[in-house]
Image (cartoon, rainbow, N blue to C red; front, side, top):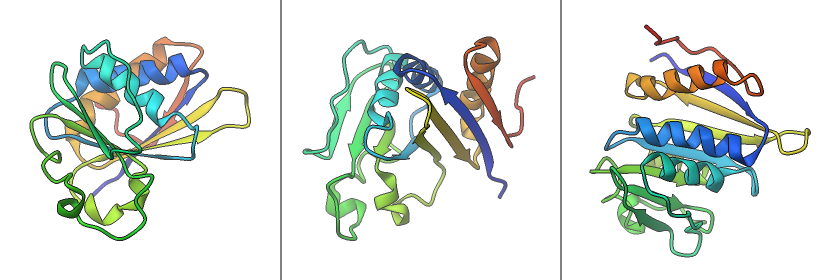
Length: 175
């Protein structure tokens, strides 16, 4: 299995939301997006853009205290936050198994707390805070071509936006 990687530099919350919008526009039911990064890195900001890309103008709330929030859009968005989870657990114990691979997309913040749960097709998105003010390094890792159109559109956006920087070891799926 070949792992593809793509790194995008975001220079503002608006950039991060724009990246999320592309993800939302390309999302397909059953897709899983695993988000990692420190507190304040921009995970929820990215999810905000994903929701907007799904044609829902609402604002995302971090589901930290309730674990999961469901949003409507052209397809449902299931936003899950594992920040407060400390013990090993199963998806059934958490009640999130009904969201995975269903009729919407699932975005999971703090996914590093449960790597054993997500062995199937998914895209891992790690957001690092750069030493430069407001800059984030957003790294995408994926092995399934079901995410190819999303990655393709991200590459196009970055190539058309001279303020953003993109590079990686991804196969270019652009025709």
